[in-house]
Length: 161
Image (cartoon, rainbow, N blue to C red; front, top):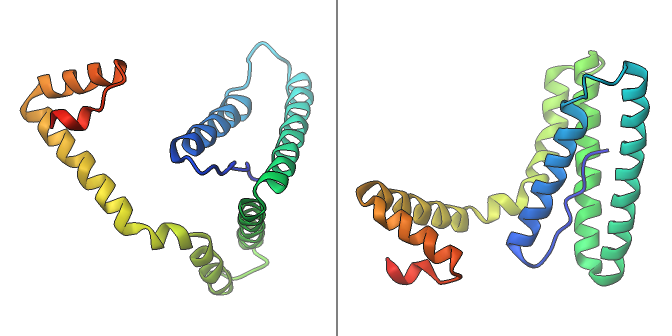
């Protein structure tokens, strides 16, 4: 099962949770402990996967009670992800041709990326601001230093621009 991203009204909160989940999965699955034997590692990995599924289930239950709209969105995203994963797996096994897989994947991926596509203008605006900030930092390294100091002190660094 794909990791569940817990959606929040606060963008940074959501980003932090997504990053935490991916980092957790990275350390659990991609960096095995060399001191453990293979059977011990597999047993531990299975236990951790079960714990993650239980945490995801509890998180979804909380979201369902507190924010039904977000719950429906998360469930829909998970369903889309599972459908996509199934088609890709069928293609890799050779039971579906590339053309058939593409026909099935296009509408699912389009739906999956719907919000991202709709918010491209906002993303372009955010990246433009970030690019401007980087250009200022390159031209004046003190700008970047002062910006970081302001962040540490909890001040709005945009006033300094």
